[in-house]
Length: 427
Image 1: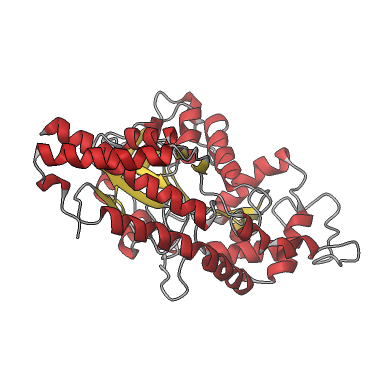
Image 2: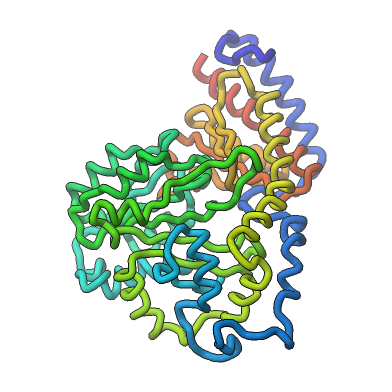
């Protein structure tokens, strides 16, 4: 049973720090070179999809009477539209299948809104002020897109049920300069939170002051479960938006980048028919068609959404032991010390860790000095500025089990060391 550090006097804290520092120095002497900075699939995860390379060959037939080798079908081949529509919980006439990156789609959507405008509305670049709501902690690449275009980002705290909807409603319903909100609604990055039904319904019932307000519903981890018997359910948002007369308010994004090959998958955007038509005006100018051979490859390999879900259980078998290992080490080493909190997710790619206020940057720096690279402190907030300097995103999937155990045990030592320094300073 760990004794809470907050119960120790200054002399005890100093003695404990000496012991922890000795452990830390032993790890430094190991000359480690481990990287846990991004949520990347491991080689073993990539290997389970290698059969997709053989799903299409020179004797493969075509689909729907279409020669996938040629130009055309910029919205995607029908079978791929069906597959991705089922993944995103939209109709086949409400989806566009794109290239390998949903982030690319999001960038293009924001770029088009800035330069051309959405559905005939004033281009955002011609407005005095454009703002986005950013649930935090959140996905750094989302924040990078809006920062790139000079859009002002507003922090919205995450709760156990999703973004604080009182704050979301206050901004969206009253401020015409608020044009969008970033959302990772299922197994959120980094906390692994799935939005509650109430949150989805309140999001769908927003009454935006801006007629061109959009929810960027990045459902990146919609089928990325860790456990077979415990899986979060997310209420589909598009039908809820339609019930409230807000059918045009949401863009739903997803891809197979962490289903098959990272960077070699297919992506899609789901939206109302009017949004689809608006997006297609750009796409038909931008490209004569995306990689239909890759779309065919995915259709041949998975056949349908059930095939894709079965495939994701293979991923779960590989990532579950890694999440369990890290969570067990956190419980064992930090449980009861009263210096940190963390969330056990049911899916996704990350473990969200909250250290004592003012300690995250120091923990990440200590780990780096000892040979373990973590996601930069502050990365889960707009402008890389965590007001509390507390949140750290742990990415367990890429390292081997042996490397992961070493990295996790060093991590808890860094947490203890930074926390002790803070408590000694305060004593």
